[in-house]
Amino acid sequence: MTPLVSVIALCHNHALYLRAALDSILAQDYPLLEVWLVDDASQDGSANILREYAARHPTWHLLLLPENVGSCRAFNQAFRLSQGEFVVDFATDDELLPRRLSQQVALFGQLPADYGLLYSNCELVDEWGEFVRLFQQPDPARLGQLRPRPASGWVFEDVLRRYFISTPTMFMRRATLLALGGYDESLSYEDFDFWVRASRDWQFFYQNEVTTRKRLHPASLSAQTTRYRDPHLPSTVAVLRKAKVLCRTASERAALRQRLRYELAHALRRGLFGLAVRLLRLLF
Image (cartoon, rainbow, N blue to C red; front, side, top):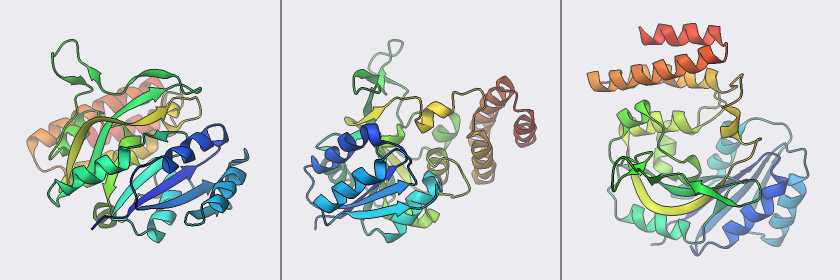
């Protein structure tokens, strides 16, 4: 039986990129899609574009939120209404390559039931859609390997130690999201928390294919972490507190200490001394 895939397309002020993103859903060669268009109170005309696409494609679902609730809560509202066996969290400043969903469904069909996430390589493009580089590139120091080095299987320790998953490429099993209760709505971003909680009880698999185009632009969520006052660091501290409880081995605790030291330096560079104290308490 062909499984249903739910694509939850999250938009917040993506009008410049929105048509390309929605057209990339239409270009998929996978036949059984459930599409949710979710606007998180955009102020740039995005809602009108979403209305236009919803009118042209009556099977698509439209959810226009009256106030900005953040990506985690916006996603959860659509996820709880969706039905797909697999779920894609699709930011509408990115683009899906045409064979992405068919490839990922086929891969999941070859994996045991305890695999909860597929992820892949992706193209990083600029604001105008011009190629910048691949997310995972050949490592000149280690012939035949990629940088950042992907990991498959039980990756909880890897998730704590380093950043190696391109968020827009994630393809999630619905059962995994349900087991976690969806995204944590108290956080300002979803990916690190999902990786930590999911990888404790579910295996991950790396697909060595380019499936997605991730757009680099100043308003993107990832770009905000490089700002002087990182608005997402309090959420990272909250995730690391959860991770400390989930650690089971000395090696996992060592990986957590490595991440804590990294985030501590990050907080100190930005003058976030209150958060630095919280990180120190977790470190010792």
